Image 1 (cartoon, rainbow over the protein chains, first blue to last red):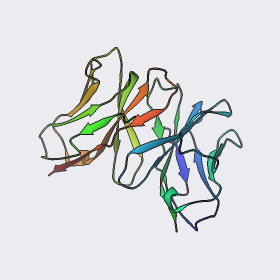
Image 2: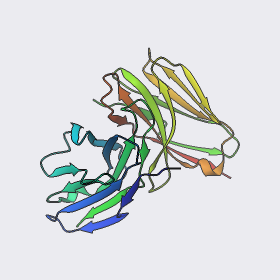
Image 3: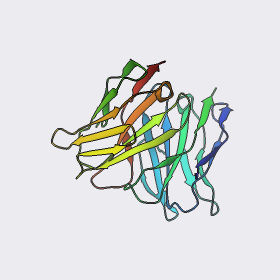
Image 4: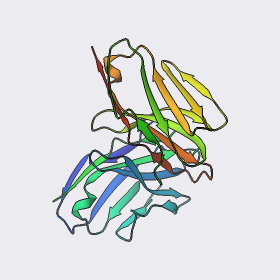
Length: 114
Length: 112
């Protein structure tokens, strides 16, 4: 069964450093998303991406965050200057229909900012 | 606004018993989805129910939706130890921007 692949599975970074989280969505999917889950809390929407541009972003997704689809397969989330409160599990997801079908999530990247 | 609040927060049952989890939401929806998350792992899509549907089945899963009460329930019948996980409801709003809004989740423990 097709999977969404995320790398790395775990990243530790110093506060203030830039991190890039990588995702390979399912190849025929057109809609891409990033979510995060702070330990013990609910999964929160960050951003949706379609046709090479951001469709929607949440209040969390401020100027420190950016997304990119640098080639036909990868979808990346960059945090320019990490803060302690950015520590969370970050999930990438993709879908072939906007909101009308189930989403396929990756296994996540656990980001720890120290 | 908060959306997709679930209860109970935690549920512990014996293998073979049924497990029922409830979800409430506040705004109008296009559809509601249920996901499972094993500890520290990704989210797995279980089932989707559209706003014009009232009940849906998939294997041992039964989902109901009451749009007048803005609530949904997930029933897992004949539970197994492997069903131990957290279960989340998530809604897609009626404007269908594609954004999923998740609830806090129900942690289910099925004892062998």
